[in-house]
Amino acid sequence: MIKIDYTNVMADIIGERDGILREELLSFRHFITETHARIKKEKENKFYFAKLPYQDTEDIKEYGKYVRENFDYFVLVGIGGSSLGTQMLFESLKWINHNQFDFPKFYILDNVDPEKVASVLELIEPEKTIFNVISKSGSTVETIANFSIVLDLLKDKLGDKWKEHIVITTDTEKGFLRKFAKENDIKTFEIPSKVGGRFSVLTPVGLFPASALGIDIDELLEGARKMDLICSVEEYVEHNPAYLLAMIHYLANMRRGKNIAVMMPYSERLSSFVDWWRQLWAESLGKDGLGQTPVKAIGTIDQHSQIQLYREGPKDKIITFIYVENPTRDLKISDNIPEDIGYLKNHTLHEILTKELLGTRAALTKSKVPNLTITLDNINPYNIGMLIYLYEMATGFSGYLYKINPFDQPAVEEGKRFMYALMGREGFEEKLEEFNELNKDKYKLEI
Image (cartoon, rainbow, N blue to C red; front, side):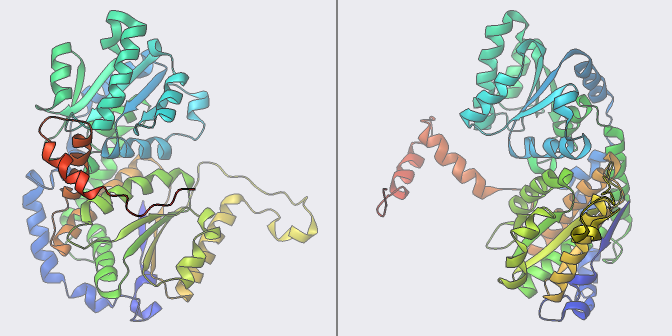
């Protein structure tokens, strides 16, 4: 179950300077009707992610079971959209001590930071490890570089059996990884060609590792199907949760100057959900001088580091709180505590966490900072599936509002081209010349 309380973004609560008029939301009804029809037609193309909740998962579950029964370590080799979704599923749906007590232990090789890569490889036993190499293009530099390290390790330690310890998730036809898998008869999963990396968590990119780690992926997809049903049937903005979130952020951004979107869950299990959302929101909507900067905060930790700025700094933010009604565990404070802190007697930590959220929300509302609250009754695969689909659809719909393409990332590609030039890749000689023109260190301080 998910509830969205957007009371504190509305003008009748925080004033017209910072809040949204209901009439503004309703004034887009014709646009929403037209866009709703366009999205339905685009589910075979740009909005192909909307078809993912209905996929067959038997092969994924079967191989996931094989991994659980035969390996003690699962290492994901991938970055960005190839890793953030799985990290989010792992950290939200497995308990925090999983790697200390359960199997298979899970690690991610994303960045090409040698300290991290070496540290992870020191923790595993290659003969008991499965490596899932993920890249849609099949040529992501960080992924291929880390894979080359892994490949050397496996060949050195396992000899001819190295192929049994690799699963590749990549494009259906093209790219280095597809070619490598075919030449070496390695188990593969496919990323649908019409699904971009940051929208791919409900493809084998996220579903296979989740299944291997014992997460119920059918329940995950069931939650996504529920949200798809709601968003497909309802086109009225106040009944469609994805359109509602998109409209609120768009109006706050374009008409109220809220250029920063903060997401602040009051559950550390949802910390990585914010990392996943941050890429989705930034890479999809940050184009043509438009879009909001997504910022991560965690309750209650960032009450002590960020709320001062949010209340009394620039009025350029909209806050989304995420609250979980029923944690899987709770701890109670006894009545045998010093009298000076007696007000804590017999309260649980979750009760305190809840009151902290309510107090922070009231303080922000008092300062006329727009804020909304998304409430989950529990953290489970069904609710996470709903939440994933909700934000994917809100992001896609926002593309129509901003009149940009939310499914490409041209600015990211430019940095990659410069990197290829610096690595001496053939065909990027002109890029190297351009880089040398740009890379001037005219003003520099050395200490």
